[in-house]
Length: 71
Image 1 (cartoon, helix red, strand yellow):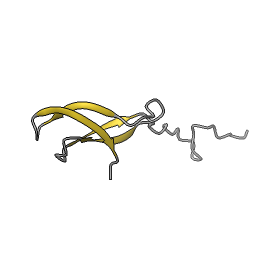
Image 2 (cartoon, rainbow, N blue to C red):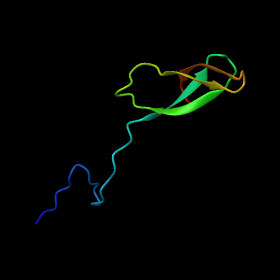
Image 3 (cartoon, one colour):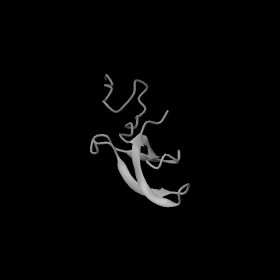
Image 4 (tube, one colour):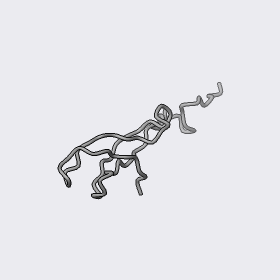
């Protein structure tokens, strides 16, 4: 009997896991202090640039953080 390879199995017959859909993004402070947070974002559901109001310990205030690329 021939063994067919299903969509979620590799050539060696071991089941492979799905790749995570979320990406890591850097949230950079708009206070120009250089402080940033790293968080996850699902690009399928959140297509816009991510902005959050979070605490910046350099200026000791809550400021707007905007999405930037991780290098």
